Each structure stands twice: as structure tokens, then as C-alpha cells.
Length: 124
Image 1 (cartoon, one colour):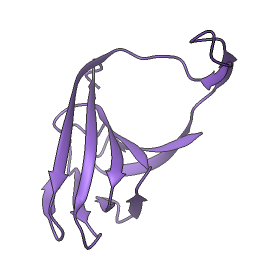
Image 2 (cartoon, one colour):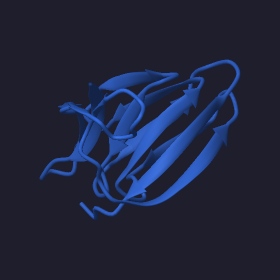
Image 3 (cartoon, rainbow, N blue to C red):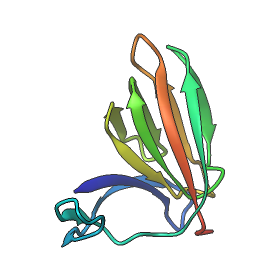
Image 4 (tube, one colour):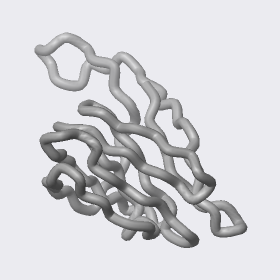
């Protein structure tokens, strides 16, 4: 499994990179059959976000290290190096660009978007 991560380099530019998540077959919830599971990481908070069609966030750094899960709709994120990625329903990304120029996020689906944000305990 992969997700996209946004990070800031030493010059303050924000970039994307792909992160591979290692999964192991684990008997996590007997008597249910074993499942492919990643290592668990501590999280601080979780919240739901709804955004209308056409919403745009403008350029900003991330408020905290956190995962965004797209439950409905489609988002487009542009990082300061010019790369744009689209995140349709079912996608996940990690924003870690806490400094520098940041990123610009837009709703590109006609019916808006529903997201889950999981703020991590990490600070960088």
C-alpha cells in the first residue's frame, strides 16, 4: 500500500514523495480471519471535514503533521515545486510541510468533499 507525503526541503520548497506501507498478516481480531495490517502509530486527534464544491485553501503550510483520508469527492493539491496530485475518494495523504511555502488545496469534484483528518503526535 502507498500514500503520498508532502514535506518541506531545506530551501523551504514543498514536494511530494510516495511512501510504501509495509503490511503483515496479523491475527488481530479473533475469531475473524487474519488481516494485512501496518504498524500502528500514535495519533493525537481525529476530525471530520466537509468542503463545498469549488473550495480552495490558498497557499499555506500544514497546521500539524496529519493524514487526510478522502471519504467522498476529489481533491487536488499543488506543492510549491509545481507538482499537482489528485486525490479521489479512498485516497490518503500525509501533510508534513509545517514550514516554508506550503501547498494549495482545492476541491475539484462537483459535489464537494468529505474528509477525515488524523493529527499525529509527530511535530516534524
